[in-house]
Image (tube, rainbow, N blue to C red; front, top):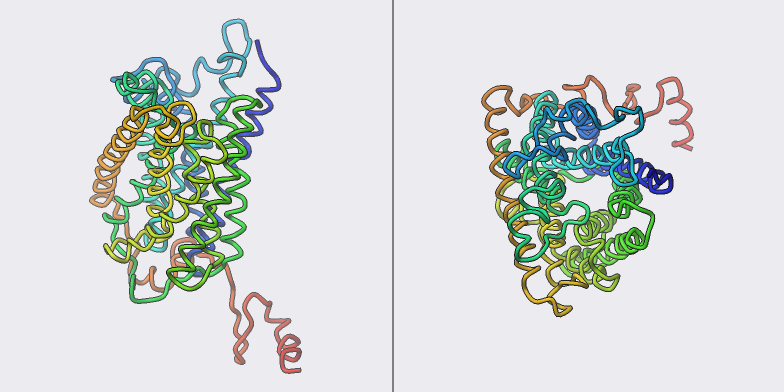
Length: 436
């Protein structure tokens, strides 16, 4: 029987998660240089466009269809175009329990959007927009939809898979499906595509830190739909997930800032914003299985380790432009593995033995290997066919103008220097005020 309360909760949660991708666009956009901000934001919006279409056509069917193929993915044609998921033969909305299936489709497509968009942060300022759009659709089809099926759709990495004979794998809202999956893909693409011109030699500082902090705030807000919404009901589990989400993010801010202060002598706004995201990433798989005290521990560890991990790109020479690997891969691994210690029912610290820990490590390793292999194949095929890189001239002059024929900030000269963003007609009066 339809439960309107649950339906309302899930529609609200879906809307919150949808907001996360524009929030990510602000977060990533602020971290780039000013000549690339529009392209960076367009990569998030472009992913929304591609995934919003392919998910309806075959993404839902591949993720949650009943005809599983080897426990890796479901038949993409079984529910192609959402066939059979909206109305039954009597003209009533098809329910899964007390929730219309079409509402769950809306909730799940937002996860696919944000996961794909996350990867773009590793490719800032140097790739063709068309290649990115093709990659988004192909990667979602071959990596994200199968991972969702394996973990949440009754496949190999879920409660019905082979690891469940040891202990039931726990991924409450996407540690493996979203963050490890996207983080591994980001690392592979950073290696295949190569570094930005001047990486390690020229400064690549964020051009707009208020954008970054606003983006982090929107991500935090949207994450309540991500985690609390994954309870599939406005109940105590949703409340626990909400509190754990807030607590872990807050603790991760502190963990990141302490590392920054000790290592660099400064606690920065970029560090605080990045710490928020690190904590949110780490609590995602664990939000329904740890206590708020456990969330504090998890958040502090994730914030500190991610703060340390973002510098690895300079040591090993890969250009993960906006720290997708350091935050999402490392944070996803931290959250997934620490469930084995902190889960209140089965964790090692609560007398549950090592079984849960073993399973969490196994599913993390399986997710890493699967995502790495699939992403590498896609990346190499696209490199050989469409090509990944924009021209050197476009990268140097600014990818916004070269690719999109737009710029985020106009600087209009008057022969006396000009003022950014001020129409030429007003510049004389502004110049007078400045001199005064």
